[in-house]
Image (cartoon, rainbow, N blue to C red):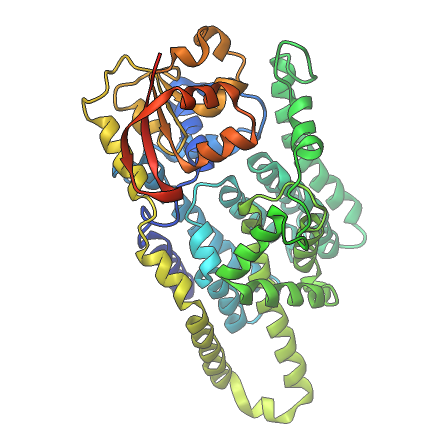
Length: 489
């Protein structure tokens, strides 16, 4: 318990320091938090038309926790909401350590794996952001924990399937990891009762996952139609029709830039973890964990859509592969090399501590940036301006979701007074709410996200509104500037 308490403390400190300042708030974070608020306050899945872009279980979890006072206040609601991610990361730390011990990884190497997960700059950057992937991690590790049960009780396998279903209903793309969890359950079960264990696992998984299409059926939105959203159309977009990010080997592709961005944050965990994952496939007890990284690697190479947060789910398993293979190497060395026996566990702890310190020197710039950077000054200044009485409260203000909640609660208290820019062009309800199109808008809060999406997504109404507007306030300069623009009728 002392080890677990120490690991939780380290993770909490690593994420809480400068939580509001770094990294830059992202539109996805605001989307999930605004949807969570709508679940909590209005009993609806979204302030706008819910179009099955993701299963709603992720922001339902956020809604269930959003009553805690520490998740409110501050210059940006989105940044305050990141405190929820600290709780999920702490739970993930506990489960990762317990899973390592269940895989018979010695205590020093189990601690090593968890510290790699905690202290890597890529973890310190991504784990604090309000992403569905961060919500999914504890569910996924828990599924592996019960699938790897040494007691082989039937209910453990049923629970593993149910927890994996919770993972998929939190972030649907984690479904690609189903073979890895199934393999863990297959390996841990008795040969004579393996069929019962498999049936229990699959029933636990399938029956809970069916809740999502059942919801679509009850709403009459399972199959595509000309006048309504549908689960079929959303899944087709997410997995087949969405524009890809290109090849990771093409310097001109966005996938290439994304992967090199990860490597810039921490090449050591990613490269060592990838190598350890391949080797882990040769070790029976570690094979399911290595398979997670391999499956994610194949997905990375398929030239599909590659978001920045894709790496999040891989992080605990990369760290666990490194810890597991270090443990395996120690076992082999201890068996065949007599000097290693003289080394002892005390010497092992000293060596591992030295290794962590050396990595710490390589990680120092990334961790220092996470602890000191102020990336959200422009957004906070724009929110402060909108909270002032300068702009009439009957105005229609277009914002991105990084500040949607702040503006909504500043007195523009309707989803069509505080308007998410994406919905003006793409939500069918906008035709009824804004019959005059861009001329029904009063102010546009132009952020870097909006500048990019207006162009790449072809948001013509938004483009026209910006074209027919003038700056009344600007915060920052260059590509990170945030502008308050008044629409000229």
